[in-house]
Figure 1 (spheres, rainbow, N blue to C red):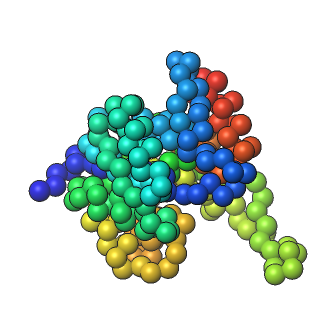
Figure 2 (cartoon, helix red, strand yellow):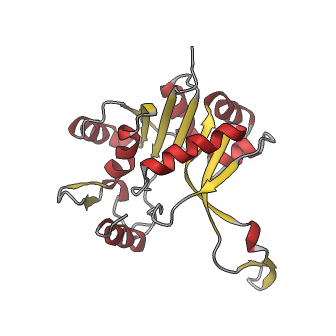
Length: 231
C-alpha cells in the first residue's frame, strides 16, 4: 500500500554519449570539493541517496555497463539504489526504472548526465507536483528565439515570455507516469511530454542554471569549473 511520503527515483543513464568525441561522459572522473575523483554519474545519484524523502532509486544503465554501475553503487554505498538495464529509447529506460521501483506514491525522474542537481531541486519538485500530480523544473528562456523555415530563414520570432528550457528532476504521481507510458506511443524527449499528452497540467518550477546536462566536451569543462565554485 502506498502512502504520500513513499517516493522513488529513476535516474536515467543508459545513453551512448554520441556527442562526446568518444568519451563516455557518465564515467568521466570529476573531482569534488573533498579532493576525491568520482564518476560524473555518482554526483547525479548522491543528492537522491542523501534525500530523506527518497526511499529507493532505480539506476537505469546501458546493458554493457551494468557491472560497472553495480561496482559504483557498492563503492559509493548507494544502498537505496538497484541497477537496471535500459532500453533502446529514453522512455523505454524510464519504464524499466518504473517497473524496478514498483508502486510508490511519487517518482522523480532525473538525467544521469546532470551531476549538479541539488537536494533543494528535488524537494521543490516534490512540493510543486502536489498541485497537479506532475512537475518539471525549468528555466525561463533568456534570449530572443527565432523559428526558421525549411531553408533556415527566419519564419517568425517567438514570444519568449512563455518559453522555458526543461530540466530534470521531473516529479509525478507514480500511477500517472505509468499510465502516460502505457497510453502514449510517440517518441518523447522527456516524461513531461508524455504526461502532457494525457491532458494533465504539468507544473513548472524554477530550475537552476548550474543544473546543466552534459552532452559535449564544452559542457564537461563548464561542470568542472562550476564544481570549483561555491553553489
